[in-house]
Structure formats: structure tokens, C-alpha cells
Length: 414
Ligand code: PLP
Image (cartoon, rainbow, N blue to C red; front, side):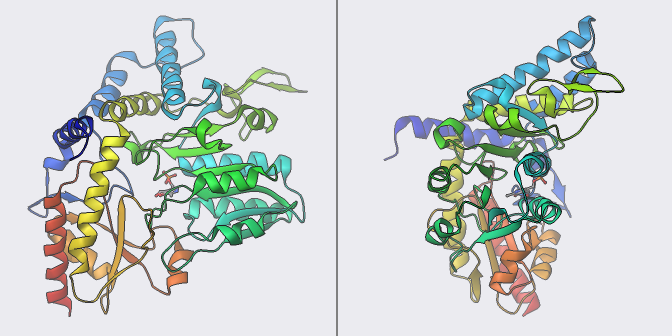
């Protein structure tokens, strides 16, 4: 029997489905079954209302005006920085930098940290299960600097080889950048161990938390991670907003990524004096509405609790695996012992795209393809997978409909 608090939390989570107006709509004249939250999660009414309220009543530019509205907008914007600080347990609010999203945050670190620290002959370590966003920016800076990208291998289950990783770490390694939870395989990586081993050699670690921030409790001080990045839109907030957490000592030592307004203290034609953290990395008018909407999403998650959400999502993943397993010719891609929120599969003989199209006709939204992780598909020698990804607002009924849909696809296509 689960603990009473867990049961109470779960009831609240089940009731919260009604907070998402889009889940009431029909697609192709069928009730929507949304199983694509790993690509982007849906938004609760409170996030939509908060953005609406900001534009209706409070909009002005931040950090610039003496007038009332500007000061009000600045306060609302900076309050969210403190909210995010608490949410991830950062030591200081100025270690939270607002960006456009995970991709933007990684590009910031690759460019700025890379510019200051990488030289010809150096190495950057990533893993075999990275999203393109955590491959390409590192490839670009390595190419520019004459550095080499090293890749931690993974096994057939989709688990990283930590022993091989330890062997890759050397005096040449300048940074390790690894995904916390894989968007294609659902693998939850042993990130504490990855960080511990890198720190033994004084190497900083960046974690791509795009799929983790809303599925597991993230405490950046407990992880002792040096950079942690995530996107608002995956955690029930708006698109176009994200976070780079960085330890003060690293962020202070890094040059600005972009130049412009807000990131300066003073400008003459001869010299610019850069602003302090966090503004040094927030050039130009920021996504104020996005930040304020992100704050509403953080409040929303904290109210339901990540723990209760994750416990229901785990139940959904296990239920989906159990139900899919009995289908003939099913093949799972990614069977890590420690996994979360996504199930990737193939039906032998069928192209994932064709299954996706039939599911769509039934109102079921799944993702098909390489999920921006082409090297994973290459490793398994497949063109892509069908990926069902779950959020706490999904139900077992959604999964039953998925199974019916896959069965229908098999009947039609085989
Ligand atoms: N990293 C992972 C693991 C992801 O799942 C995604 C998005 O799917 C990204 C990075 C990129 O996120 P964004 O497109 O929000 O920048």
C-alpha cells in the first residue's frame, strides 16, 4: 500500500488533467490522445492566463525604465529568476540565466566556455545518446579550435558504458556534456557518477536536462553539476524560453556570448565594460512574457510535486510496455533498467512513419523518426522509431487507445 501522502499527491495529479484545455479537443474527429509530450508538453490554463494577464495589464520593457510599468515588469521578471533558483536549488539567483531554450543554452556554453578554454588537441566528451542540440554546437566549436569530440559508448539496452567513460577522461578533456534523460530511449543516466568521475580530474560537466527537469527532482547543488540546461516548453511553460544554470565561478570566467543592450555597464567606441551576472549573458530585450509564463509553470509543478507526477508517469510507462509487449513482432528500442517517460518501438516489417500516419487518423499524436538523435538510429541500424512519450496528464485509457491504434496499423499494413 503506497504512503498516504503519495496517494493524496496522485489524486491531485489525476485531477490536474482538466487544467489542460487542449486535451479536450478533437483531432480528425476523434478525441485527442496526446503522446508527444517529450517533443513539447501542453500548457495548463494558469500558464495561458498568466501570459495573457501580462500582455493585457503589465507589459513594458525590463531593466530600463523608471516608470511604474517597467519597474513592475522588471520585478515580475526577476521574481521568476528566484523561483527557478529555488526550484533547482541553485546557490545564487544570478547563476540562473534566461535563454531561448536548451539548444540556446548549450550553444551559449559551447561558444563562450569553448572560446575561453578550448585549444588545438583538447577534447570534449559527449555521449552516444545525445540530442543533436548537444552534439552539433560542440562539433562546431571543436572544428573551430582544432579540438576533438569523444563519445561515451552505450550498450544494446541503451545504457552508457561508465567504464569506457572513465577511460576517455584525460588531461586533454576540457568539458563533459551529457544528457540527463534520453529523449529517444528514456534512459536515465547515472549523472552523479559521471560528474564525480569528471570532478576527480577537475573537469566541468554540463547536463542536458530537457527531458529531466519535469520528470525528476533536480538539485544542482546536490548533483554538484557545473552547467544544467532546460527548456520551458517541455515543462508545461511557453516556447522560446529556457534556462542555463551555471556555477558562478565558471560563468564569471566566461566571455559574453552575444553583445547588445542589457549586457553592458558602459559603452564607448573604444571600449565596452560588460555587466555582471546574470545580465552579462542576457543581451537585448529578453522574452519577458516567456519568463513570466515559465514562473507560472514552475509554480504549477511545485504544487503538484515532481515526485507525484513522476510516480504516475512511471506507472504509465510500465503499463505501456506491458501492453505493447504482447503485440506480435514488436521491438523496443531502449530497454535501460533506469528509465522514464518515453517508450520507443518498432513493429517488424512496418515503417514507423506509416504507423504514425494511421495513429494520427485516429486522433493519436506520437512522434515518428529519429527524434533529433540520428546517431542512436545509426547504432541500432534503423531509420527511426515510433515514440510514445508520457506526461502526468496522460491516462491508461490513452495507452489502451494507442494499443488499439497500433493493432489497427498492423492489420492495415501487414
Ligand atoms: N535535448 C533533449 C534531450 C531534448 O529532448 C530536446 C528537445 O527535444 C533538446 C535538447 C532541444 O530542446 P529545445 O528544442 O527546446 O532547445
